[in-house]
Amino acid sequence: TPPSGAARPRVTFLGTGYLGATYAICYAELGYEVLGFDVDADKIAMLNAGQVPIHEPGLDELLKRNLAAGRLRFSTDMAETAEFGDVHFICVGTPQRADGMGADLSYVEAAVTGLAQHLTRKALIVGKSTVPVGTAEWVEQLVGKHTSADLGVEVAWSPEFLQEGFAVDDVLRPNRIVVGVKSEWANGMLYAAHKGVFDLAATEDREVPLVVTDFATAELVKVAANAFLATKISFINAMAEVCEVAGGDVTQLARAIGYDPRIGNRFLQAGLGFGGACLPKDIRAFQARAQELGAGEALRFLHEVDLINQRRRARVLHLAAELLGRRSGPAGPDLSGTRVAVLGATFKPNTDDVRDAPALAVAALLHKAGADVHVFDPQGTENARRAVPELTYETSMNDAVTGADLVCVLTEWADFRNADPVALGELAAGRKVVDGRNCLDPALWTQAGWEYRGLGRP
Ligand code: NAD
Image 1: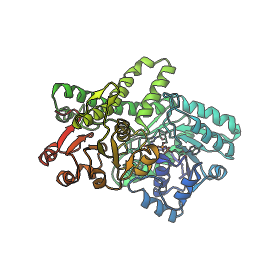
Image 2: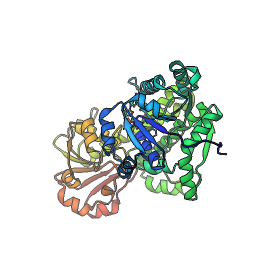
Image 3: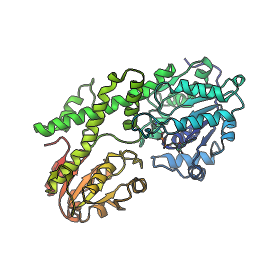
Image 4: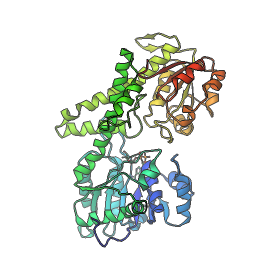
């Protein structure tokens, strides 16, 4: 039931990366007055100039429109941010800690502390970043330490489920909203801060389920969802491993089991596995936190999920060596003297995000094995070049494929899925292809004279 009397609050988003920039822009589109804050002055300058620092379909146009409408601006000034907002969303990064397991909460701490020190009136601070369970309580204590009690600043948690590549639609039309709150006031403020989403749904004859719960559950919902998705992907990739030794075809297997509505066919594509800035780090941080809380055994399976995922990268390297006629020794295959085209660098299509991208990791493995690696990605080249500068980056698929002894399709961009194997065959030096995403039609490629290898396929 909507709490009554809540007007439209002014909202801020602290951290204008993939999550925060998309939110700030989409919330302005929903009619809110919005301010985005970041410590990265270049990013803020770009956003104020109408340039989206990330590739996300549809976001450019919305940014320009809402800057022009005067509902949206970006700042590096914390005092201005604190003054502006009734509801402040924390959207900073929570990367994997240097020790490899738990989450690094130093950005959350810096953003919350900085904001709290500048608050001069009652406000709601809402965590959106993905965090270990218990963080919201800790943030509440931090806020208590840095604001005077008579301001009555409150904390809430609202985890985020957007998917890069679909982020605009996911923010405007989420499939659920989850809020962890401790008071009716916080609940009402958060309802008001989401009213634009509910109103849009009503005009489109949809409903957005709202789950109101406690802090711990809200935090856990996010990591549980990611653990489930990672497990689903690794499950089908484990089936691919078995198919590889048994002579089965995992794509047909997935289709057949996916018809069971209890299983469902989504997230059941066997391939190179998951990556990106969320799933890998989130399942590791979840295990680390469960361990701290004494429930490590409950999540031990996530370690296997991670290992299955990592093994797929080695499998692609193995298939590449096999097609190139190179034997693998104990130190891996020697691919020196070969030229390999890698199509795809981002962790999935329709983004420029290469963080923990399986495609780029495999490209680096091929390079380490001695191959001359030529990478093409429709959007991720700049980020990939920064992350792995030792590879050669091409500006078109044709340039990458020209003269290649082997082509590896490692991100399922539509351009690659729809590529013409006959035309590419004329450019390549050898018609050999590893389909790391099972996104090509093997019959079509084989007819065009290519030797084809997919994952989990005979
Ligand atoms: P990102 O690295 O793209 O953005 C983080 C931003 O925070 C950067 O712009 C950085 O400059 C800024 N920042 C760092 N310290 C700051 C501070 N003290 N004050 C203000 N800004 C600061 O990260 P992201 O992908 O947007 O992810 C942010 C959070 O959202 C993470 O916890 C992530 O797990 C979660 N999340 C991300 C996605 C996604 O698809 N990217 C989806 C759901 C949840």
